[in-house]
Amino acid sequence: MHEPGLDQINVLVIDDEEEIRRLLVEIITRQEHQVVAVASAEEALNLLPFWTFQIAFIDHRLPGMDGLVLGEYLRKSNPDMMIAMVSGSVDGRVERRSRDLDLRFIPKPFGVDEILSVIDEYMAEARARDDYRRSVEVDAEPPIARFIEDVGASFGVPGVPGRIGDRLVTTIKRCLNDMRSASRYNERDRVVALCGLISAKVLNLDLPRTAEGRTLYEEYDALMTARGKRAEFRQE
Image 1 (cartoon, rainbow, N blue to C red):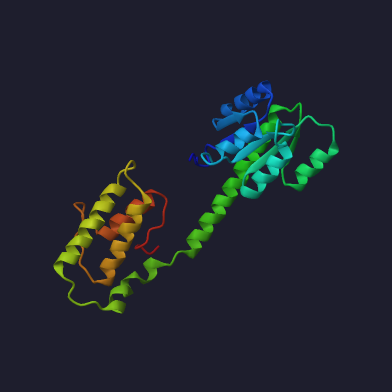
Image 2 (cartoon, rainbow, N blue to C red):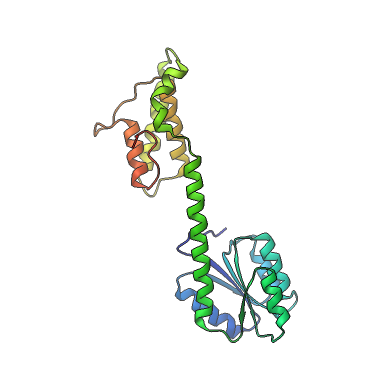
């Protein structure tokens, strides 16, 4: 499934007029977004299991399923999708129904700016949602650094076997080593390394330092800071 970041989005175009499809594809690709254009609602529905679309431009008059029916389905199943109903109809009911379904209405013939405004509006809303999610995630995270030095005393685990300590150190070092590389970095290693470091505090283990003389806690925090994430063991 294709899931771009906010810098590039996937756009679905549904219009039975080849000339309109080509025009929309040209406008959207010039903005360096990915676009898939089809001639019917049925073709569009066949794409949905394999693609995640952030924006859809839907012609009102389509062969088979009506554009408004497709728009209503997409709105219910994709609440964050920006959907624009593109119509050459002079019937005011189409525009009213579009607005009732929270669809943008664009009359034909349309200008390039009308298409770009839909993309710009989606990008602004997506960034606002992303910023909100980030703020909620940060607020929900426990303040590990504030209390980490109290963890060992709280659990008071005596005499941990050497093999357990060795296994813990090996795993932490492997994860940190992979996290140093942009091509090998992944969130699984981050979580495993963090859990290992907290476990070492719980077990009162004396962890070795890196070749540069940093503790493994300092190394973790440095890697997180470099990636714009929260340092867990350094109190600001």
